[in-house]
Amino acid sequence: MTKQLQEVQVEGDELATAERVLNRLAKQAQADAEAVAPATAHVAGRAVLLIPRCSDIADEAALPGDYRRILEIVREADCPVQVSAVGEQLGLNASVRGKLEPLRAKMTKLADRGWLHKRPDGRFTARP
Image (cartoon, rainbow, N blue to C red; front, side, top):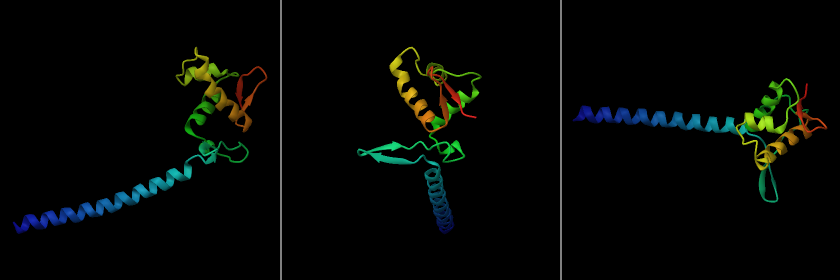
């Protein structure tokens, strides 16, 4: 019985040590995620993402994931792309105009910030 009690105490100590290590790793992962998370601001009491200007930073890692995916699709295209073509690659229903408007707004925002170039015909190209 004493031997079993000692084994249980050793296991308890090991579990406590593992829990402390896990808590440290969780705190470190949270700090890392906050460091890479896109910046937000509050407008009219609502949190909104800030999309940085292309010239402000050299790395697109500061962009949210969906914006990075849009950039990737436009860069892979060998010619200027329409919003509907990007929407199709993202899996959106391109036949419904209302489904593409949020995407058009994101692409326009990327163009306004210098990540993309919006042509007069409404198509987008990647900046060199």
